[in-house]
Length: 202
Image (cartoon, rainbow, N blue to C red; front, side):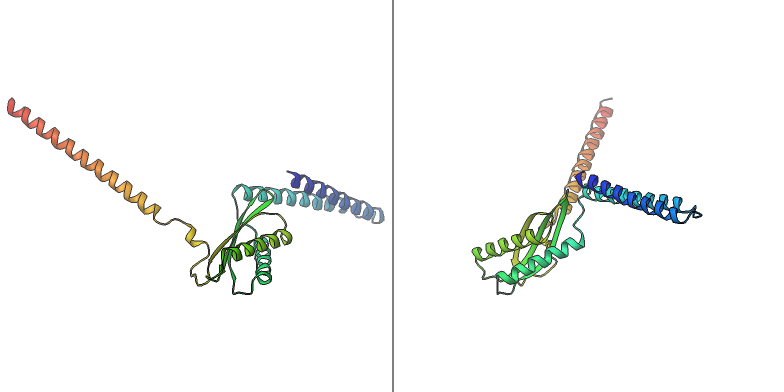
């Protein structure tokens, strides 16, 4: 809300500047009757552009959209600089992801490090990455660093997802349907047997 209000005041100052230009131009060009509608059209366009920008930004925040590519590139650049200054070993930034929470960014970084690195060395790398990103990228609120083996293959962050949940759900539904059909068949057989006994008694 504060950012939208500040942008609103910025648009007010810009529209006043456009009005000043059109009024000044009409003083020198007395026959230019088109200046007034052109100035009004320019001001209307600026207001519409500001409203659309705020609306789009708010909708993307509600949808927990990922970070902009520019922010992601800045985060990756800052993390790579921190690793180069911190460690002489072969470390690599495998991936950067994150979401925007209000005016802040929640960032997660996957780093491939040598397998012989100690916990203290990894903690030092993590602190250096967090400090460099905090100083170089505006709006980053949280930085989570995830270390993996240097020989790890596959897409970054792919192993964070739990596999097999959909298959387990399908198997559970299949077993439930099978038990329901079996119970229904047993009930039908019992009913037939009872009706047969009643017929014999008659």
